Image (cartoon, rainbow, N blue to C red; front, side, top):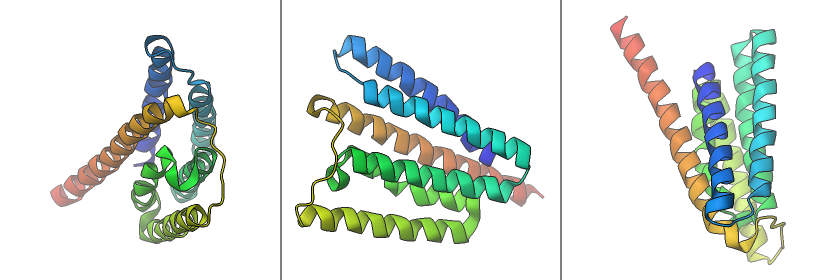
Length: 172
């Protein structure tokens, strides 16, 4: 499961880095932050794979993958507008990733974190608390569609891996 998610995340990261580069020239946008974010994500993902390879411990690596996924989502949401961030959509898939790689307990823990942080973002928004917004206004919709596609790919990847596991166990 974890290897499958690592592979799909690497493929997605490479494809989105290319898409952002193409968007720079085709749509005359300035996706420097997005390209930087993808590069940071690829470096962290590479470190996670190395830890997985060296530690040879699926449960620790799964927990690490799950928490890093959540932390990246949290940080990028803060940096891109909080409650109104186009990144908020990816919170929807964060518990699915945790359930798949970390099991039921990790999934419930992450779901609680998502509920807590999402509620915190909404309360802060209602109170008028300003958060960072590093995404230029002209790129918000590009980021929104990109996150929508990433969320869909991650969710489909998780469900595909889960379905494959079910079929394997049913055949035995």
